[in-house]
Image (cartoon, rainbow, N blue to C red):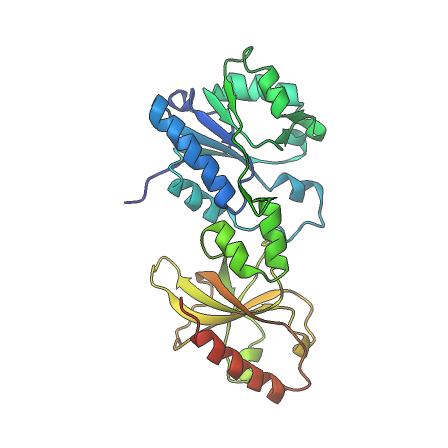
Length: 311
């Protein structure tokens, strides 16, 4: 049975959720660095018999301040909540990040929000944590006022692999470069996109290769190309094997990024249904073909290669 998690949209939490362990951050992707942090927090939870709460923000502040960061997320809010549930979190404060909130000074955040509203026992943060108007607050700011406002700051050492800190930024870079295998390793699972199947131009159907079209919204754009994937439809836990093209479809002179998925041995109508696409292996980069026949030959080869991939 999946644990029920309490989701708050503001800082007005119930009295029984105060004096908890609080982790603050975007936690985009919930990678192995985050997982290490939550494992550490769970040791405190068991030792001190406390709840774990998370303060996170939507949209991600960097996306709010920079409109050019449209395609940025590793995972969407639904996935984040699912991952946090698996991390044994008791409640989440998903604060809407807007202009008004962005102007909160770091001191007001500590006094008026952390102390007066959340009143935590412990605060877990990474060393590079910044907060408050113009990002003027940091870990040292939290430590400076910890005695005055009755909380303790815990800042575990970051997880490193080959001298590199495991971070959401690193994983985005790996996905963009097509290094899916390493990105999946650092996520400790397959990177995935969740979206609704929408009606497209039916170009795939016209060449004997019907696809489900998914708008990737604000997900990070991984390296355009062909991927071996596995798919879940709706709430059905069964995985179906398939092939996906994430790209701009240069052969058809298209310019908008689109995720197209062909599910092997599947012919049901799933328009407007939510599907989850897990990326297993990067097969090849996207390229423009001289004609449709050349494209069809390549698709046949891609399908052959994808069917050989274990899911």
